[in-house]
Image (cartoon, rainbow over all chains, first blue to last red; front, side, top):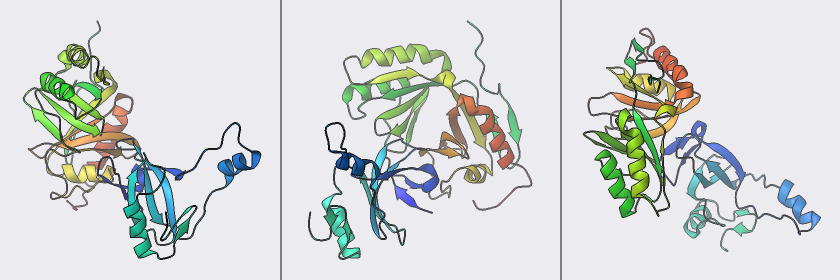
Length: 113
Length: 188
């Protein structure tokens, strides 16, 4: 059972109170972009074994969207953070680096950015 | 106007705990900036209660204000006053980025009391109801089995439960089944 702390209401919500919203930090490529970019935006998703960033909604609760960083292998949750951001907070990235040296996920990775 | 009737018109069930349709309750959904002085004043004027802290309910003599989300409150007022109070709040918040709606008739309101109240609610909701974890004055939005609901704990150990009126009968039957006299688990 996955338990995530909603950053908006501070509730430690378990999976059944939440709705999964897919991968986090997608950049939209819409009209005017190349077919390849649009294709990748629509279909190409990360499927990592290890560090992963996702969107979740506290559906049976405050109703807000938020982000979560977790490990897909151990189900360890590194942290949750606000939806109003385009990248994981620096301190969370450092925390993940301490626990999973050498991690990488899309353009984010251990040590840089 | 036709006579207003609560969802199950005062139905009750007694088992591990007592489940009651708590009758008509005025409820106003208020969205806006919870930190703004105008909103705080409007909430105080309408309910007599202050803006509650995160995850809490502040109760006054004739009303209450419950924390629904970072930008939403549920104001509890007497049923007869709900229409007038909604207009008052809307008037007081004119010009602010806020919205007040009377949702009294869209909601059902139950009371769950007695020894087994924590246990009965614990069976249908994924929340820790240990006496140390869930204390009086705490307000929680969660789910009641398959439907959304919210509840808070009163000083006397009873729970007040709010859900959509459309699922009122479901919630009553759900709580009644969970309160069946021979279904004691004995966790809380």
